[in-house]
Amino acid sequence: MNNRLEQLLELHREDPQDTFTRYAIALEYNARQDFEQAKNWFERLRADEPDYVPTYYMLAGVYRASDEPDKAKEIYQAGLRTAKKMGDTHAFAELSAALEELEEEEI
Image (cartoon, rainbow, N blue to C red):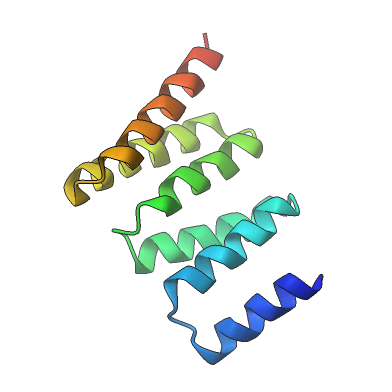
C-alpha cells in the first residue's frame, strides 16, 4: 500500500459514509490496476449512493479493463439513466460517448 491509499483508508475509517473518500479509494485501486478492489469499492458506492453519477463512468471503465464488455455496457446504460434523472448533461454526454466507443469496439 502506498501512502495515498493508506491516508484514504484512514479517512474512510473516520467517516465510512463519506462519498468522495469512498470514490477516491476506488480510483486509487483502479490506478493500481487492482480491478477487483476497484470494482468492489465502486459497486458498494453505487449501491449506497445510486445518484452519484461519476461512479458509473469509472465503474464501467473498470469492467472494460477487466474484459467484461457486457457488464460495462450495462453500467454505462444505468449511468445514462441516472445522469438524465439528475439533469447532468455533461456526464450524460461522456457516458454516451464511452458507450458508443465500446459498441464500436465490438464490431
